[in-house]
Length: 155
Image (tube, rainbow, N blue to C red; front, top):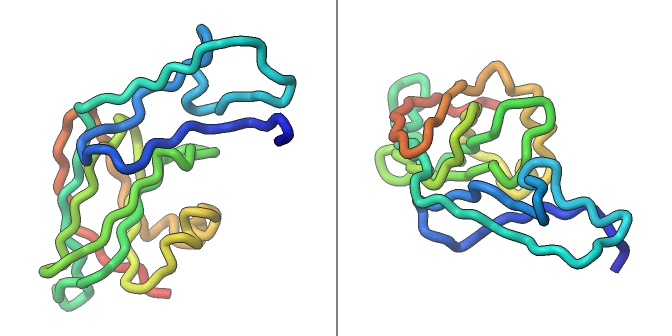
């Protein structure tokens, strides 16, 4: 395997946990990633999780206030080069309700679609750019619980 820049992501953890920090020796590599392009001397990787993640409870309704069942909701970090490790995904159930937990503190934008391929968006966040104005900005503090109402994006 060729040396590369790697990012740590965590899956299948409790809903309230979020990735708080990734340290390689004395450097924080949470956002920039672990650069192994020049090789690596012996070092220690430390992954810190927090059980005090934020949470968003919300509802997605169409223009006639009807619930959007099975809609996909994306929580995307704001910024020029958002870290994919901070992306979150939720699905609406009965009544158009969704919940996204384990959110790291920060600024985000929420998007909702009635019909979209979640894998396509997660692998190419630039697909969101044309719909940026239809997203909803939200600030998440550690341990905060926020409530939102969204309209699905029409394509």
